[in-house]
Length: 311
Image (cartoon, rainbow, N blue to C red; front, side, top):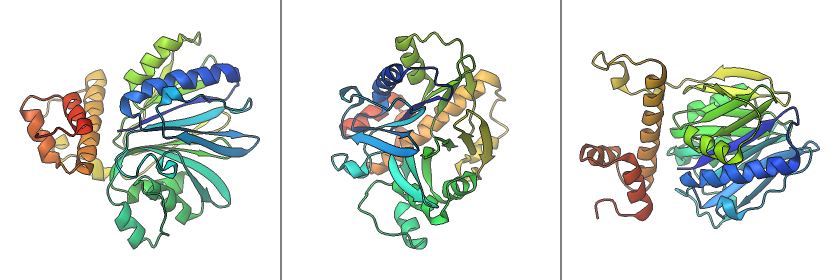
């Protein structure tokens, strides 16, 4: 499992020194979900740059330019494609309609090889499953809500994507992988991380005097565009492939509000865990059997990382 993180400071509220500090603290908290590589994407003078290394986040020193207002980050837990080959790490460059973009992914895709053949996409030295999303966007030769919808409806697996273009527009494509996005209206700042727990721990360490945040809720199937000026645009894609047939069963108790949201986050985490387990050769049924035996999801995740499942 990986972690997405970032900041949108569309009113230039923070100094560049403060933004670098926020990124350092936030990315270090994101190591909970990945320590194999760390990367960020940002713009300066209408030029998109990516800085990534096969290192834990706390070992990197972020030095973004003074004029960068949107920074998109990723910490990686390797499932496909060796992290020591930096080309396999996130974010990835893409080009559509003559403009560069950067893409980061949390989750696991399992139909990348099939799509590359069926869509006649070019071969690539990048071994990471996530890169198929870049190629699908490039195939449409444009980056926007419509091409992101197309991409999201083609890939299979677990995902949430973030995409940054050269005009500092930041996109969120929310599948079943978790995402927590906060907005601070007093200063025009957005902060995000893959889970609310990670984001809140980072905020606790940072102790930023920026007031209380509003949480921007993103559901599976949502596409959100945050423009350079902070304006929001919404679209959606067909997320019916994520639906569990049991979700509509009348035997489930009706849940609303916080309980319903908690259950959806737990379900998303479980689905992502099963996707990661598949990369290690374990079926979803194997994960279910361990859960039925009393193991927690945290324990199962630890087993996967240590290679001790069923040993």
